[in-house]
Length: 212
Image (cartoon, rainbow, N blue to C red; front, side, top):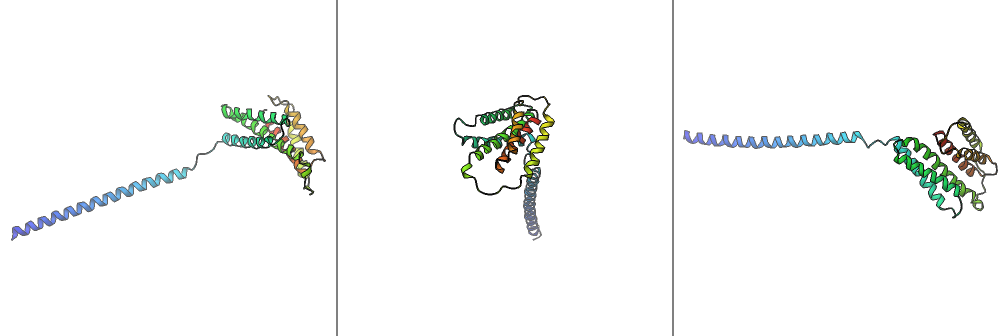
């Protein structure tokens, strides 16, 4: 009997050890899985905290120039063939500046000029449409022109500050900018046409201020 009892005890102990080993292995596996998930979650949080890639000022400038270019192109495409040659030339100059800004290492120098020229092309293309819509004009009063007078005066002052500065290929655009301001002041224009002319002058002034 004692031998039998010892044998039973030995079997029970062996079974208990096996049971404990199985339980320990299961626990270790759970711990490993939990650790793996925690590591993955930490990595995900870290990536989320890092956020999207920051866009550089140059990229923002190119996007702005690109949108002005596309809007100007769309409006100019509506014009009749043989009209708006000066405007098409201005758009082409803006496109060349945009290409230089995209390809050149000194892109920041060109992107501001591209923005100015392409924005001017956009406003002038709209001004051309407003000038051609005489029979579709609404019979309503325009808002107070006070803001326009101030805007023209500010742009005129900026032009005075850069009048004597040395310029690159934008020498011919200085008198164009001055003339656009004078046209914007013309009382015969409706408010929105005057606005487009003034904004075009402001845009060219911006390009000239940045070395065009």
